Image (cartoon, rainbow over all chains, first blue to last red; front, side, top):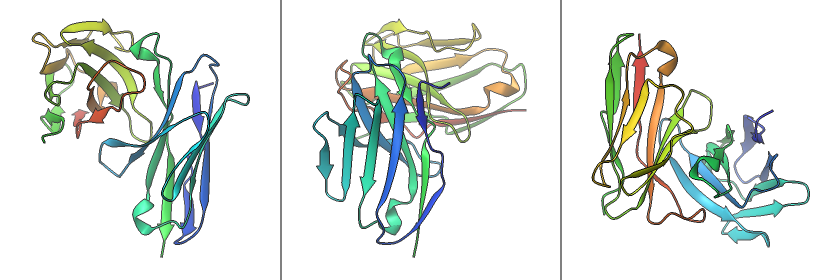
Length: 111
Length: 115
């Protein structure tokens, strides 16, 4: 079983829809959590950090549930430009090697 | 300002050939990471430098993989006697300070194909 697991998708939703992804992690010592976005054949870019209290950035909301060991990303009023792969990242900084990327969830927004 | 750059962007190698991949991090960034990303997968950690010190190389898949950052800026990932399973995108990332909260900035990657 992978340490960080994501539903690979693809999620295919109409423009304007709300879509949510979950990411589960297996190590309870995990400390920091992030969502990265990766466009096709491009490098990953930080979308947002995920804080225990939950956080929002425009149409994007990230939440952390430590008890159940998952993080979520909610995208409201989705745009065509949101089409990408969303990577969940979990770290525990006892060493740099504990930066674990999920395999990503593919999202496709249709007109 | 300039982001992370990598060269070459594409590399085709014959099985058994040695390759060298270069990463130029953002100027002043202390931390530098190398990742390997196979098709349809997330990046997998290979190795980490803090300045010139290689603090973690536990992700390197075999002793054919070697990385260095001799002056604490540019880094080179070398793969000796390449195998077909080495075909992947090799991503370099840098961050300003060594903190788990720090954003990593990725380069565009080197796409390696071993025939």
